[in-house]
Picture 1 (cartoon, each protein chain N blue to C red):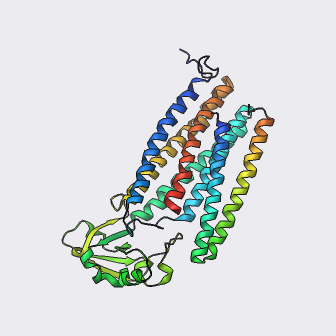
Picture 2: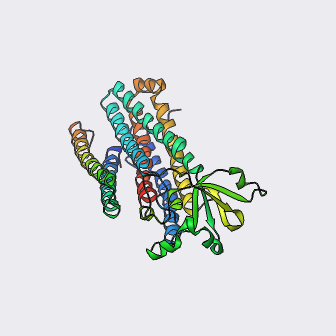
Picture 3: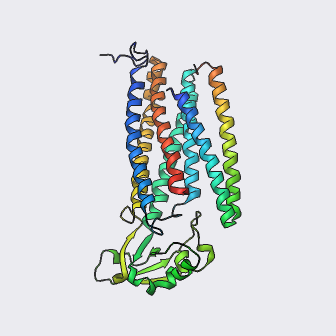
Length: 69
Length: 291
């Protein structure tokens, strides 16, 4: 596996982590009712979206530059 | 003597040699970390109720370190792509960013997170003395609310000499909020944003204490696992940073001028290692900080 392929796998796992952290924050907020966790959930979901956007951008850029084969 | 297949691929494997080498190495690393993660999971599943520490790590700091490592993976791959496009200047800056991320991660870990633990004290009370310290443990309250029993009193140890001096018969502890107000409903659940020590001082007689230690690997299976895995991971981060520094120094410019593809292959191999190290952290963070 090349670096570019491993990078896409890594971004996929990072996205799953961001989504998981967001769900965890929502759960803690529901149990404890502390608003800071809601802010954490929003930040985590935003990070997940940013990672997806980056992953797609990276794949397209590598393909355009013919670095992805 | 020239080392063969550093740029061109070997006919039998279809790969250049270093790539085969790094994947064999990473396979052994998977077994190493896989064994440690398995040990952690089995220790945790087998722990009796109330024994396994929870909420002792600083989640905001851990989250920041996670973001730093993800960012470093992005910069290292951009450094490699820059070399492929023959943009050495861009490579140099991306590599500097990667090194900076690795150094920040290590500084946060070694100068902030670990020392905070080394300064934290915990004493497990003997079962027959639990009633004597009810005002700090609140076990009647915990039982009424269906919470696991509280066996440990934690906080900042004022007389640290008591740990090693048998003549000192008591521990003087500035209590954590949980032990200062054990019947406060806000303390029923772990706090992932750490609360400071309180001004309330408890005196624990050594004869009532089953075992007492700072938050070191000797404290519990939890901290033994935590320091082993994060320590081993930190050593890998340090190794990666040292390799990146070597490839960022002027010596890499000479290799680039002689054969840019050779340098790009070196960066790709070290980038694969770096991604693996970061992927390990993607599992460490939720296991130790969140769950």
